Length: 77
Image (cartoon, rainbow, N blue to C red; front, side, top):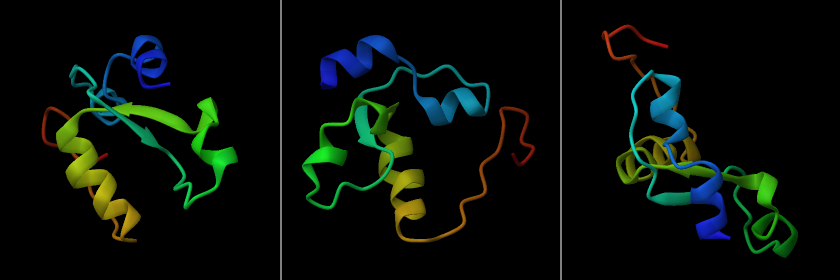
């Protein structure tokens, strides 16, 4: 599943949103599966992220924090 996802979506989804081109290295579950095999193996529940976005931004979002992100010119999105 990891190889398939990174082949389909080779760039970080969060970076693309701020107009930055970064290779994705982590396959993330958009909705936490919490042990659900249906969500774990659902290809529509996957997204490609770079390690910094996964480790920083996604983690804060999962903790319920509002994350302000900025585009490449420094404006919030």
